[in-house]
Length: 74
Image (cartoon, rainbow, N blue to C red; front, side, top):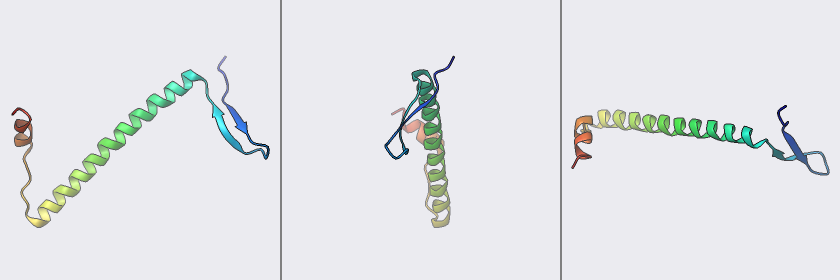
């Protein structure tokens, strides 16, 4: 049987803390990490798209993917 989540409340009945079974905490933490990584990747893509849009509007030349990949070999 799974241990239920428990709440710690103050003298007025307001929830102040939560006690989560460790295995459930680990699962929640793994999910958080995956979602956080996804947000970082999507934010990076969004920023890159803004940079491309700005470069197109201003006529600025951007580095090609091939040049970028070859640069890391040097």
